[in-house]
Image 1 (cartoon, rainbow, N blue to C red):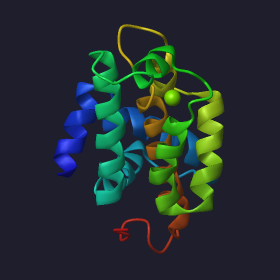
Image 2: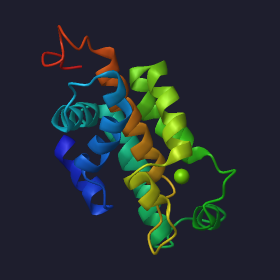
Image 3: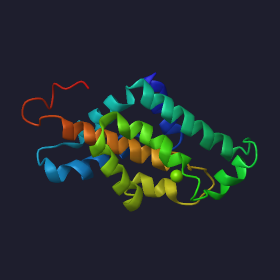
Image 4: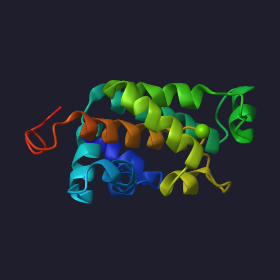
Amino acid sequence: MSLDVEQWLLRRGVSTSDVAEIVYSLQRPYNPDLTVEECNDSVLAVLGKREVQYVLFTGIALDELAERKELPQPLQAIMEADESLYGVDETLALGITNVYGMIGLTSFGYLDKVKPGIIRKLNEKGKHVHVFLDDLVAGLAAAASARIAHQDPKANRYGCSG
Ligand code: MG
């Protein structure tokens, strides 16, 4: 199923390496030996969690239904406007970030504000609806980053499977 979720992300224009780049930028200041490959491994480990996959499937499905104008009103109109008071997109994304606790929450807030890399691209108005995906990617990057922060970089960096 982890492969399924990677396919869903790719279909929406997001690769694990896009997310790994963001994780790298978050964690590199604290960990000078960190590599982008390790960040990508951390993203894959987070994507391996069933509760993370369920959140991603749900948010991506809503984006795709909105794009095809298949949602009931008033939800369709709210999604098309990317109404800033909607907030369910951020709430859902926290379901990913919370897997790794408070450190992830801080990073999520930062990413939501700064919108680096792929998050900014998703947030630009275009023909696609990414109401959920920009927040889900921020949540995923924050979780993968927190996962690295939770590891003891000397004793356990390669051994942790969490
Ligand atoms: Mg959003």
